[in-house]
Image 1 (cartoon, rainbow, N blue to C red):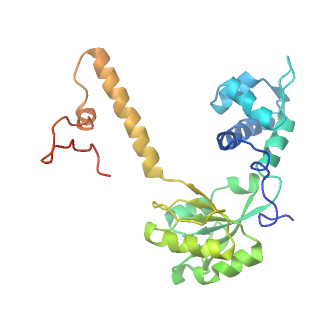
Image 2: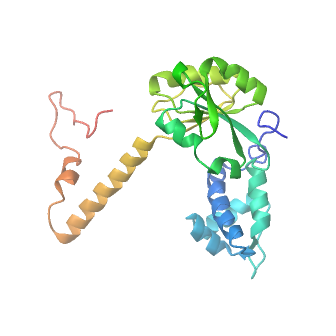
Image 3: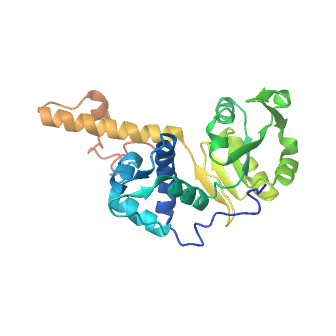
Length: 255
């Protein structure tokens, strides 16, 4: 069985833009849903709507894959599923280690979507000796002392960090030194990695703050349309026009 150590996705060598790569999983999710309903073909408009993009962008993205729909028929669903899965490297097995088995790490371990999307949880790692041997999602937790051996024995190239922020960089350094070249980081901190190591950061608090921004803006727009003052919460977030003691304008939020 192929592992992530010996086979790399072809997207970069084929010159596919990163923005297109980021949308491929959206298309694959929509196509998989169509496949499960035994839908044989789909138009660019229908697939774009299901993926949340416009059809012109979708057609441009698919042109990088060398996939062009048939006029009047659309795209073959099963073939596109195969094409995108191959391009994303999902036609092979990718062993993954999850480091940090607290509430978040345990939730990730219990996520049922890994196996169906080409990923296998090879090991669960935690620094707490009391966690060693305890099963989470049917997998016994192993101590961090075993980290390098697990990565070597299982050919792991993808690591998931779900530790507290203070431990994340040290864990990252050990993963990279052991041969991991891709990291999914859930810790609320920025990781420093050498060239050739890819890091994707997932920060739920940042996503919620972005949503709060949009909610605040909508509240202000609705209030303006009604000719009334915006809600208190929205007013509190408006930039101040009062200058500070040094003549500068205070920031809305601390850096």
